[in-house]
Image 1 (cartoon, rainbow, N blue to C red):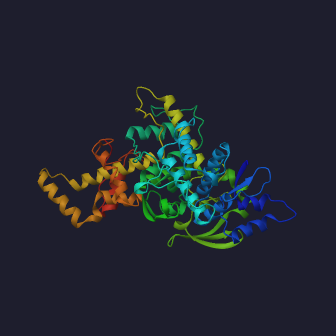
Image 2: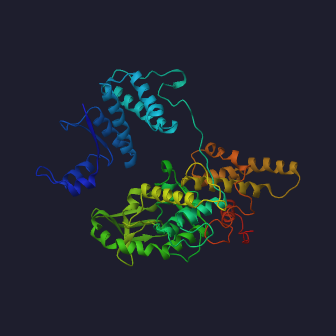
Image 3: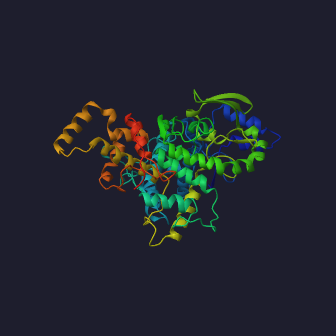
Length: 494
């Protein structure tokens, strides 16, 4: 039996469903009433177009797990891939044996043209295990096809457990990535008049915001203008806001953005963003029924109010997920414009594929211009997440140097460390960085310790001159904020 995979999209049904039996609006209301989430996988027989069980029931069950739309779609693709593998063997998913699952694992991790790694397979094996548990609980099977060995291991588990892939940049590497790759300059800092990239100020500001705050991609790329205080406060001030819905696992934390990073965003908002918003205002005006149109922002409480789906709504900005942020607009100079900081040609927030495309284009430009006078490029193409790792390593190293002080007596320094760690855990550099990164446990942050002795760059103030203008003590400011110290005088980069 050949099978087709679809996913639920209530907005598409509302707009495009044209049937004499049921209207698109009725379908959208029914999906909402029955709590069927967008992204829920739907498996249909190719010939009869009837639901394939128990896959459809399993997908319906997954829709109650409050998962992201992209996650549900990804889970659907994983199960469809396994069903196709079983079909090639002449069996369905419920007839799968342990041998079938081991063969599927070998195919995915060894035999296919581009084998997946342990992390990706761990996700797939965990989902398969969850599906078979569901099948047993609902009576489709008497037992799971995979036996559990000692210590809870089974043949599907990844054989290799990988540690964190921590990759970081030096100052020269970062500037080359930001200014040449994303910004379109030549390696000697001259303007490249042949550069045909799109929105270089936006992409540079994204890099500075990522590096200056240590946020993950899905966190900094979804920031709203009021969260940075842009347009509401005098320019050049640092910002601090609460991150929750867009944080990993929804774990809330306070994010501090130093003034130089805010300044880089303000430059983009002043020079480049108006052109993007003006070009898309008419299109957004026609789509206003599909958007969350904000009529007021309470900066004190961090709440926004407006109209969504014809109903007046009010949200705490920290609790707004990425999907809602993407369709949040307000009345601007040219008409409706996104409330998100970063916008693309559509006038709305760029998605994951867009930011990936910007990064890949930057890498191609960097490698094409690489020479004896440019920084050494790594073998692997850089990721946005590398900026988060760089933030963590530089801040951790700098905080440790602050804690050490300049005492020449090693015994006195060690004694102060003991007293410091036992009596003032809230000032421990590792715990500070762990909190800033939003790690679920300090154990995750421990992985960075092996890199702190191999400093990525030697200069007095960590990150001085990385972000925005050539002058500044950006990461010294972050350390002062973390420790609650008095501001230090600014110094120029040596």
